[in-house]
Amino acid sequence: MQFFIWFFTYVIIALACVAMWVIAPAMSLIIFLIISVWHFGGDWSDSSTFARLSFGVWVLCLPAAISPNEVMDIFGDLILQSLVADNVVHLIIDVAEVLFLMSSLYLAVNITAHRKAPQFKQRIIDITCLAAGALLLPIMLYFVLYFCALHSPRHLLLSFKTVDSSKSSIIVIVLLTLLTLLLGTAAWSIISDYASLATATLQVIFVGLFALTVPHMFIIHLFETHLTKREFD
Image (tube, rainbow, N blue to C red; front, top):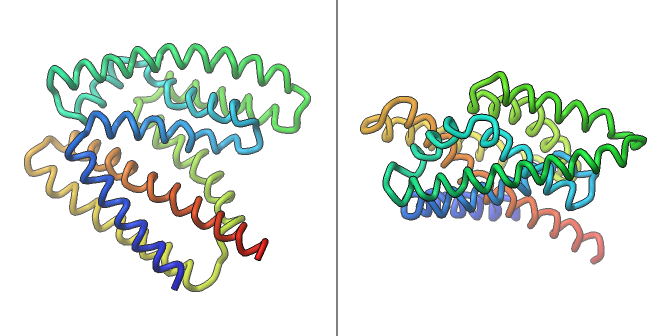
């Protein structure tokens, strides 16, 4: 029963995120980017909090440092072209470039200082592969490969350590997956009626990720808190 309560909580928060993006796209984009920093930093979960945040910043700001014009076009399509939107996008790119330099410097010092640590080689592989991907691939393909090849496998393995494999939890996961595919397809169909195919796909991907990431992090936090409380009861 508890899992189904979390399921409906997840859906309500996801719909609220979609509504928020429609009403205030620029603010939603900024919130999404800030949340993504913490979320991506989870790929280095065995590092210090500052190292995690630095890696999250580096992953997110890398494309803006390498291909600022391409990122600017993507963000412009996400929050619609207007004078305010253009100013917001330029500000985001400028901040991202500064944060990229700062995080690069810190990560270089941190990785070098921990060169004898067990995860040293993995850190070098992560940085090298991501940098090569951002340099050689279109930005969207870079993010798709990052999500599919690095972020998602690690995040799933970490989540499976805390989420049990009971029948109810599996049902909730399946329902959320099917609901996500259904809503994503419906949204793409609606948006593509008045926007280009590329813009519609871009908006569905980013708004969908925003609507999934926020409730996902909230539910995971609730679940871990629930497990901790149960251990001490």
